Amino acid sequence: MNEAVKTLDGWFCLHDFRSIDWSAWRELESSKRKELLTEFSHFLADMELVKNIGGGEHTLYSILGQKADFLFFILRESLEELNEAENRFNKLQIADFLIPTYSYISVVELSNYLANHMAGGEDPYQNKHVRARLYPKLPAAKHICFYPMTKKRDGADNWYMLPMEDRQALIRDHGKIGRSYAGKLQQIIGGSIGLDDFEWGVTLFGDDALDFKRIVTEMRFDESSARYAEFGSFLVGNLLPVEQLETYFEL
Image (cartoon, rainbow, N blue to C red; front, top):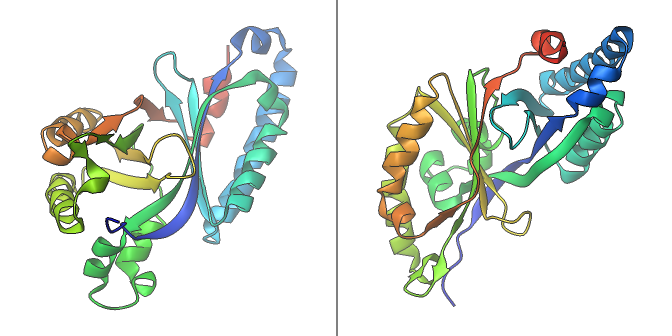
């Protein structure tokens, strides 16, 4: 049996994509819409309290195109806490006007090989650099890009039949491209083997949306992607600050 990769795991993640039923929303009285938005704002304020004590993160983005209208991205320490936040969101009155279009479950991960390298032989869970990767603070970046991906298991192009040292070399080369965008993009890798339909969910944050195009293009020419990767749909959006919610939902 080929050697399986080991990972360190951090926060569980939910990417919750919704579309807005604008026709039903338009039928509400202005005062009722305001009431629902106030309840939504109070819910987000409670989420902010969890964030402030280090219990998780969350953010909202307005999504472009027809795949969704917005993304609610939530990170929590356990699946139970993630489910609790999701259920509270679903029980808001405004949720009656939000149509689920796509969701993705994963857990922030770091390969044990990379984690040990970063930790320099120390307990990686006690290393501040490793912890920053496993329990990331979400930036207030202008744009977000999310996509799921899987490694191929296709004849000669079977990632999982490669020896560990070959996979490590390919990942090192692949990682050099990502590191070249340090300071421009923040990347969160969510492992989803056994949790969702693909094997990873990749979330990119940046202030220049063209950096999404640039990094993905470069990575497509890298062997680990060109030969072994398959991708799902890409979803891109703009930051939706809480103070702009009323403007976003107004008619």
